[in-house]
Length: 111
Length: 114
Picture (tube, each protein chain N blue to C red):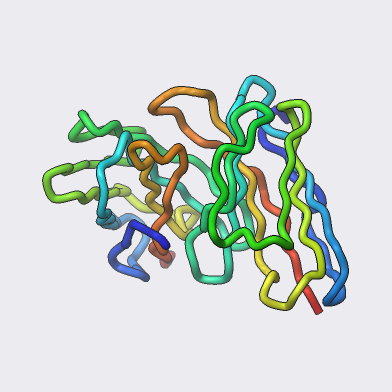
């Protein structure tokens, strides 16, 4: 079974706007990772945030983690058409030695 | 290219046939994972190796599925007597040992059972 749930399931915005995706999970984690997947392709690792971190930045990406609420958010600023993809959060579950993925958010950037 | 490599990229097979997929992880990574992904869903965990030892198998991995990593380097995933429900993208990932390390994925093998 999948632990994470992403919200929204689909998001469509105009180029240049910011996109925010949320992820909720159920159990204790070592870290949480965000991945991007273009249609029919493999997953590309975007960013990892450890359980003792609250916020992390990488280029146009900003990730937050609230372990008390068991939730994370991914913000993409100044979106581009090339950001169109599905985005998945994956939790490194404590004691489980595997990543557990959510259902993903399908992001569409309109030019 | 020093990323995770999967072969073949696509496989079409008739129901009842056996298929085998190969994954070559990043060379210094001792952890290797197999996932399955169906359309519109997130990847689902199948199995995990640390070096050559298979340490965990999902209940999704029926007795028709077997995975090996004989020398702790590349891995194979075999599906025997394929069924239409096995049609999916099979993803391999590798990572270093450690508590908070990124997992890097290959491009996947898309299996279609007809």
